[in-house]
Length: 143
Image 1 (tube, rainbow, N blue to C red):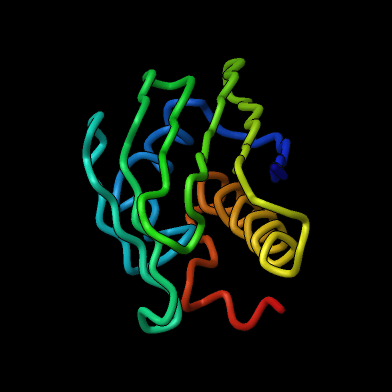
Image 2 (tube, helix red, strand yellow):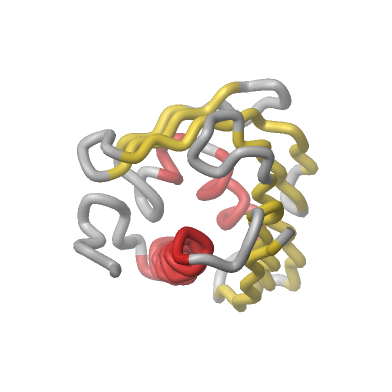
């Protein structure tokens, strides 16, 4: 199995980053405008991209306020994979370790997902630092 991992430093408190990751309103500002999720364990989430040509469905598996979020993908777009956000706050600075685990191989789908996650995590950083991210469909064509 292949894992995508990214490490970024965000100039914002961990509470603000956590809120942007766990709420539909937050996610709409950096990942996709077509977002539905509740910040509670067991909740189902659905995220549409490119006019719903690509849909990610997931379940919220873990929420440790301000430090950890883990989602399990429940549809066939990334079968059997987990997405995790680990936050380490230090005042007005947050280190985010992101992992999307469980890709069957390092192929074009894996490469595309890695590119997109890098872009969207920088969009998250811009959003929490400046108030403006680049969520889908504002992201344009990445590949």
